[in-house]
Structures are given as C-alpha cells and as structure tokens.
Amino acid sequence: MSTSFWLDRSRDSETRAYDAIIVGAGISGLSTAYWLNKEDPSLKIAIIEKSRLAFGASGRNAGFITCGSVEHFNRMINKHGLEQATEIWRFAQENLRLLKEEIIQDRAADLQFEQNGAYSLAAQENEFNELKNVAQTMANLNIRTEIFNAEEVKKHAGATNFVGGIKYLDDASVNPVQLVKRIASRVKADLHEGVEAFGIAEGADGMRILKTDAGEFEAPMILMNLNGYSAVLHPWFKDKVYPTRGQCLMMEAVPRFMDAPCYANFYLDYFRQVPSGELLIGGFRQVEKESEVGYSDHITEPIQNALHEFVVTHLPQFKNAKVTHRWSGVMGFARDGEPMVGSIPDDPQVFFAGGYTAHGIGLAFHTTKCLVDVIFGRDVPKWLSARRF
Ligand SMILES: Cc1cc2nc3c(=O)[nH]c(=O)nc-3n(C[C@H](O)[C@H](O)[C@H](O)COP(=O)(O)OP(=O)(O)OC[C@H]3O[C@@H](n4cnc5c(N)ncnc54)[C@H](O)[C@@H]3O)c2cc1C
Image (tube, rainbow, N blue to C red; front, side):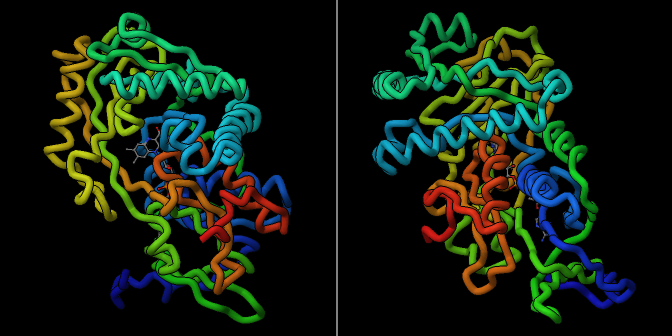
C-alpha cells in the first residue's frame, strides 16, 4: 500500500503509545485482546482495523463452530497420525467449551448460538463408506457421532439426493458478527477503526512502531491477527498463509425444517438454515480454484450458479425462494492446513495468530489463548507452533 501526501493523516498526529498493539479486528484480534486482558488487566491495548469490526472473514462466514479440521477425520489421521489428529480435534472441542464458558454464557439466544451438531453428507457411496469408517474411528475415541441413511438425512436435515451421512453431535453454530461483538463487549482496549497499517519498524528503546495511514503507534509488542491479509503487512507469511476467497449465497426464509448445519462433498460445500429460516450456502471453490485466490471480495458467476444448482438438487424447499444476498470473504489458508501462533523469526516482538484455513470460528478463540501463552513464555502444542515451518 502507498499513501499520497494529501491523504497522509500521520502528519497531523502524535505517536500513540501502548503496551500491545493488535492489528485486525476480527474474531482473532478481539479474542487476543480478551486473553491479554485476562493475563494482565493493566495492559494498555490498541486494536488497529482498516475497516470496521468483523469486516473481514469474521463477518462473512457461515457461522459453523466445527470440531476438528478441514478434512474427514480418517484423512487427518493419514496426514498427522492418530495421536496428533486426536489432539487437533480435542483442541477444537476445547475452543467451543471456552467460547461457551467465557463468551456465550447466558447469551445463546442473542448470539443465535445453537449446539445441535452438524452433518457431513455424502452424495456418493464412496464418501458414505468413508464417513462410516470415520464414525467407527471416532467411537473408539469416545467422540460422539451418529450414522444417518438417505431417508434419515431427508427427515432430519431435509436434504435430498444424498446416500447418507454422519452427524457430529457436539458441533454448534452462531451468528458470527454477534459473536465478535459480544467478545468486543468483554474487552478493554482502544479500537481504532478505519486505520490501515502498512509497516512495522524498530523504534527507540526496543519499541516497535506500527506505521498506519493515521500516524504511528508504538508498543513493545505488535500482534498480527490478519489471517488472510497477513502477507500484506509482513512478507514472512507469503509462503505460509495464502489469501483464499470463499463465496456464499443466502435465500429468503422458509419455515424451519433443518435440524442442524450440513457439510457436503468432503467438507468443500456447506449449508445451514439460520434460526430465522433463511438458507445460507457456501463453498464450490473447486469450480474455479485457480481464480479463488487474492484479496478481492468480488463474487463470480460460475460459483454462484453452482451454489444455486446445489440448492435445486438437494433442497427442494428453497426451489422457489428468492436469493437475498451474495458475498465473498478472504480466508487465510495455511500451508499445511492448520492454524499457527508464534513470533516472526527475525523479530521476536512481532507475534501473530492465523492460518485458520476456513475454520477460524471453530479455532480462533483457543488459538489466541495459545498466542498469549507464547507471549508469556509458555509452551503450546507443536502442531500449532509456527516453529514447525
Ligand atoms: C465465506 C466464508 C465462510 C466461512 N465459514 C466458516 C465457518 O462456517 N466456520 C468457521 O470456523 N470459519 C469459517 N470461515 C473462516 C473464518 O471466517 C475465518 O477463519 C475467521 O473469521 C478469521 O478471523 P480473523 O480475525 O483471523 O481474520 P479476519 O476476520 O479476516 O480479520 C482480519 C481483519 O484485519 C483487517 N485488516 C486487513 N488488513 C489490514 C491492515 N493492513 N491494517 C489494519 N487492518 C487490516 C481486516 O479488515 C479484517 O477485519 C469462513 C470464511 C469465509 C470467507
């Protein structure tokens, strides 16, 4: 980013001093502030946001609070081994427990929080067989799932043309913007909206300077919570967190029939009927994977058409419903699909959390608790530490 002489607001202002500067006001930035407050209530914290609260992926997602990761559990085992795959799953379960205990509390209705589980549905026998194996593996680990045949999927999820699926009984869903606002309401920090960061420099006395279009901010530590936008502020992320677009479509409300959110097609596609009856459907990046990268939040015809076609095939209740919203958001896909916390190798005063790979609502609250562990010298799980790169 460059700033012209005319637009440069920094010429008008003094450097502002804080104990910690968080960059990015999505679920990750706000959660980081929450855990920092808890660690040391005396810390003076600034949150710098180029737009407004939850304007990035945190305000554009589907609101699934998923346990686990981006793939079927048996595939996670193939990738990480049983022990680590189980650790990752339990980490996400703990994310949900922490969210409920610290944030949601008695506000479930305001946040449209529901814990009705989530389906993973198969349109082909081979995926259904894989899912049945997953259910077996999970039963051995005391992770609660239930197998549904085609008729049962139709009855409970209202979805047709699937051969079956499994339900993860512990998953939940939420209104993601209300969730971020609720975290914000429990945070003590100065939120600077409409301020874009464009560089980090070394200041006097070991301070770090965050350069923004509204002047300089100074603190002993800078915490990057930019997820998909991380590489814009620091080149270290260029080969570690890739900006990846996700698109959604919303259809007008019909009476509620779906008892839980659903994934389909190996987690690539997802849909849910929100508490007020509208249908949210997203995914289909596979239709034009090469172009679904970068920082633009535009939508494309092939993916939007694929989303609508899916509705016609699988959700006849919405066949005649009008489309009310179409949008996209920028996610941060990590090189190995798992989130990361740490500090920049060349600058140990610049910390970060990100790389949520489409699962920040299910992972960020716990991940940022671990970020605060890193800052205060405590160990974090190896698979989560950015030292793995
Ligand atoms: C369509 C879609 C569906 C999704 N569905 C789900 C789901 O159902 N469940 C789930 O768990 N996850 C889902 N995700 C992923 C989830 O939304 C993200 O993982 C999560 O929101 C990341 O949060 P964050 O705070 O790290 O990043 P963001 O919410 O992207 O926040 C980063 C913030 O940084 C700001 N920023 C960027 N550059 C600068 C700068 N230079 N200076 C200052 N500020 C800057 C941005 O404006 C933004 O507000 C989905 C994402 C998308 C796009």
